[in-house]
Length: 213
Length: 152
Image (tube, rainbow over all chains, first blue to last red; front, side, top):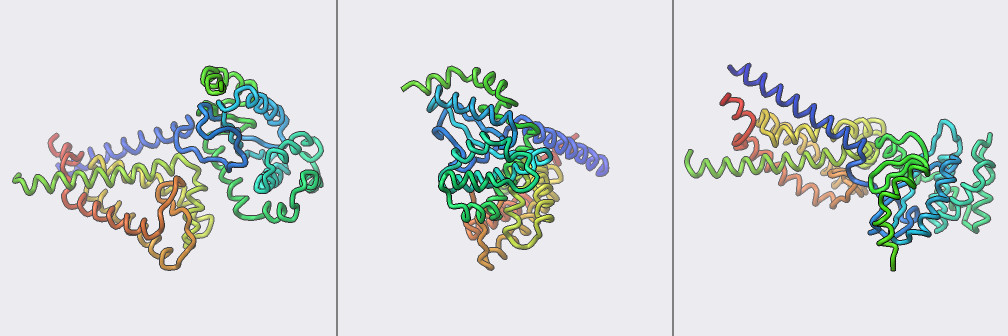
C-alpha cells in the first residue's frame, strides 16, 4: 500500500518537474521574464515609451550598420514613442575585434560619447573589422572625439566592463539570438532591419499617438 | 479534528504555500535570466571559483523551482520541507560568512538581479523562511498531494 502511494507521488513529482521544465524553456524562447536594462548611455528615448526595442548588435556586422541608420530614422519619426536599448552581441567567430569594439564603445559611453563612438565604428567597420592585428582605429576614433584614451584603455580591460559584455552575450544566447542585428520590439523578435520595420508597423498606432505633442 | 489542530493545519498550509511560492519565484526569476548573472552573484561570496560558481548558477535555480513546486503541491511534504529548510540553512551560511567578513556583496542573488537588500536584512529574512519551513514540516499536510493520494 505504502509502495503504491509512493509510486503515485513519484509519478506526480516527475510530472510537475517535466511540465515546469518545459514551461521555463518555452518562456525563455518566447522572451518572457525579467528584462535586464542596458546602461543609460546605451539607450535612446524616454523610459516609459510605449514601444521598447532591444537591439543585439555587432559593430563589425554590415547588417547592423544598416539597421543603425533605420533606428535613427525611426527615432526621428516617432520621437518619444520609442525607446531603443542597445545590447552587445559580438560574433566572435567571424569578427575578431568586435568584442574590443564593444568594450571601447561602452568606455566611450562612460565618458558620454557612446553614440558618437558607435557611429564611427559602424561607418569605418571595413577598416578595422577584419584587421590582422589590433586596429589603430580604436584609438584614432577616441582622439577624434577628444576622449581620454588612457582611461578608455584601462576601462576596456576592467573586469566590470567585461562582465557587462559577457552578460549581454549570455542573455542573447539564452534568448536564442544567433544572428545580428536581432531586435525585440515589445518582446516580439525580429532579425534584420526588414523584419524590424515590419514588426514596428504593428505598433504604428502606439508610436504615432505617443509621438504627437 | 479539534479547533486547535485545525488552526495549526491552516497555519501549516499557509507556511507551505508561502515558502513554496517564495522558492518558485526565486527559482523562476533566475532560470529566466542568464546563469552568468547569478554566477557573478555567487562569486561575490568568495567561496567558489568562477567555474564552480557558474555550474551552481546553472543548477540551483532549477532545484529551487522544483523544491518550491513540490512543497507547494504537498508532494512528499515533510521531505520537501526538510529539503527547502536545508537549502535555507546553506543560504544562511553563505550570507552569514559574507556578512561577518564584510564582503562587498552588491547583489545577494537571492531573487535574481532585480535588486537586493543588505546581507543582514537577507539573513534575518531567511530566518523567517526557516520558521515557515519548520511550520510546513510539522503541520503542512493539509490539502497536500500526500493526503489526496492516501484517499485514492
